[in-house]
Image (cartoon, rainbow, N blue to C red; front, side, top):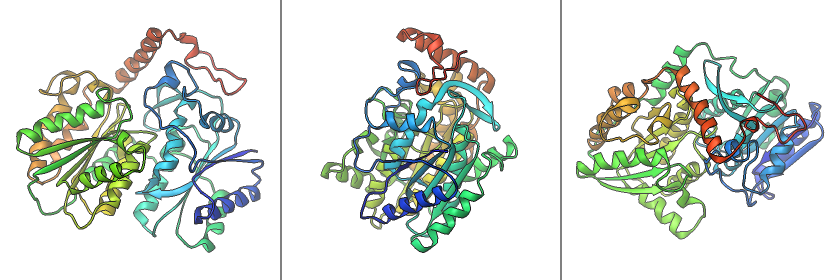
Length: 441
């Protein structure tokens, strides 16, 4: 049974030793051959968030690079093993760059399972999902967040089993910890009880931390989407806040995660500008149950530029599924970033069904965005006062305005219509081009 390792473990680092240990433990559990893709320093593009892998070239990313061979190998593997450093409870931005582009393995169409909306499968079988990460220091919250992300990923990618191992810095403990975990894989979603418990978890992690309210004078807003400027829901959400904060006299600067592709003097200057603002608001889509790789890269940069400066951090996470509960693990990651970078966590704004805001006006409450606009109107003055996201704003934004089954129906219809306008045959939307077997609808 083949295993595929996707790693960011360059030679000469502790991670290289970790990758070798992982390979040895996989062989001992009967997984062979092992195909490894080391992506450190490779020219691997970032996911563009354009859904071309669903609508223009179903089942394939249009960008021609090392991702094609990697995804092809995954479709015939018994286990997909991710190995790399942990950032804020999720994988670091470099490994996320690869995982973000696994979306082509799924169908665009919706179904409900594990109490929430997910995508349908594109292939008849999927590998077990194994996440092995290296922590900077022992942290139970990071460990729990890493496990929660692995579970969410495994559910989304139809994994029959899942394994998550968050390791400390002592190499002597790695082999035994990895071996025990591989010998006792878990069933994805086994700990989920019901939808109500997911809602309770979301409201708990999204609440603001207590702290002194300090009125803000400057705000930095970061758009986490990789879409072109002017084309993303996240940018619309950021600009809606800029309108309200600016009207209250707050000086606002808008930044884009796409500005952090390269490490340069200009990139570090942007990170310093964000780090120095009284309020840091991240408006971002949800990618593969976490933050997009470029948004994570920006957060890593900002955390490196924080030096004894008070501030408030608020994530506004936009999910394409109708249920905001999908964002709960990403909010945990955002919380850890705030703690790591020395921010007070000002609460989160988790938005489900974000596609409804794509072409909507966000000046006044109306139609499918009435709850969103109300939440922004309630949150903005509280943020100006430095109080964080108030409970009534959180209550508003998590309220869906259309039944989830109806959202799934119109979402599927929308994908089919967009494919039609692009000239893609409907019969091709569920193609399985990386195996000899193709599914038909």
